[in-house]
Image 1: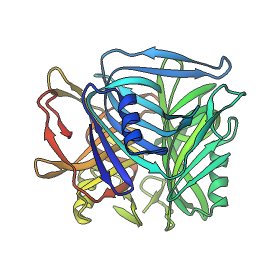
Image 2: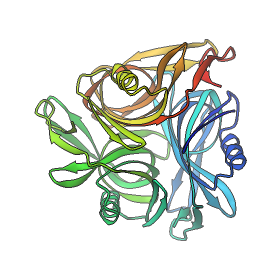
Image 3: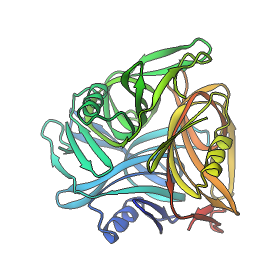
Image 4: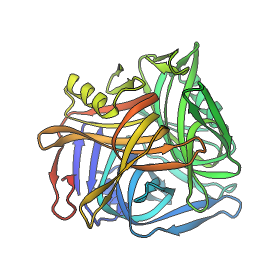
Length: 138
Length: 138
Length: 138
């Protein structure tokens, strides 16, 4: 992992093969980020994405295999049940340019993983929302 | 709606069921934002998206029904005909991870609506462009 | 091209018909940006997108014809072989709202091209990575 401190903006370049979730948690812990906004591009290998069924209060998980371009990735860092939590959504594309998208559960970096992070000064705490079953920023 | 002031960055968490357009306009008016950049993730219910046909100078509107993951949302706040105007584009995904995208006309928040806003100090005014029929930043 | 200097944030509105790559390089050179983060929306005409095959260390290029909504565009500016280089990924949508995505090689602006740029103070240099064949930030 290579981390560029660019004043209030950070650029985090994860290594090919590195876990996106673990890598972003590691850099957050190292720099003591409590909250952040993030976006990124690159490529993901074997990503697991999800769709949340509100009525059933559960995620469908989808395992995609192989290498995908990471054509959009956004989210934020907050605290959930006392732990740092990156909430990330992604759009992926294949060799025909066809796309898939969803909530990101996990993935390894494919060829590149380039993330822009804006660390935020105040914690944001997620709380369980009984209507949706989700941990929301509220 | 829950709004986190994070120095030059704001995080706006809209409630399930809240209108995205109305919610973002309300927070812009409350905080007197004249211009801003925004991105977000979450989920949308019954979104109306569009595609602009330049030659015909009109949008095709598409009503999508049900709940969609909001896997990418970007745009900006400017002034159009004297009124604050959020120009937003979205990518949405369904329970198979299939995606749709376009200009966002309107939608309600599904399970979550988490937006990062960078308020900008100077107004940006859209003007009608005769070539395209669009109100552009120029 | 219209450029709004908004403190640490810039908004670059490219003209219909203008090259995205050339336009963003021109504004970077004018303002002496060595590194930056960017995102944008708008519409692209005749975009060329790509998918990188890591095992073969080469891109597949795909020429898409006509006008596409630019529903997500992200990336960064760095230095590659001594030259400024914008690394951009895009998601595009057509008149049915169907999406395509990939690495952006080139495109002209369709109806609008609205980019938000965060110039960064320190250069970021890409180096050839032998494992992947890519120029990475490392």
